[in-house]
Amino acid sequence: MKIAWESCIYGGTVPVTCAVCGSKCYPIKVRSHHFVVAVLYDNRGHFRGEVCRSCAQASPEHIKQQLQERLVLVRQQAAELESLLTEEVECPPLEAEFRHFRV
Image (cartoon, rainbow, N blue to C red; front, side, top):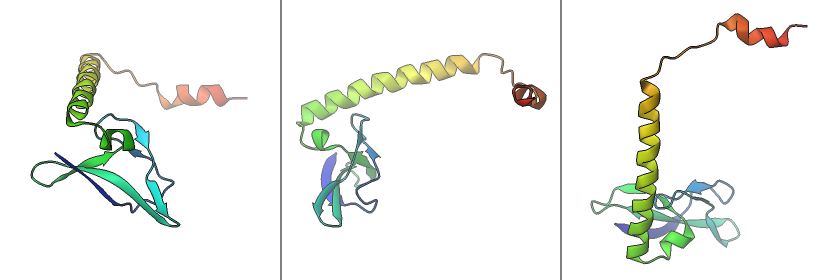
């Protein structure tokens, strides 16, 4: 993995999600209309996402720990979604949705 600071095309008002810890962060203003963001690349040079300032400045061990913790959470979320797949889905008819709006 490699983290590099690059010019941001979003501007400074659009939050990005950190690919390491999952937190929301904003690009960093370096000049009046110039913003930078840390970007994560894999070993093949493929873009993997933006990185928050805290993770960009962290040690390699801390980054791996953050990724491991995030992986545990994602696996839990996947298990919850898989359990929902086993349940029957009941959608209300359109009439039931509009029943609340009748005068």
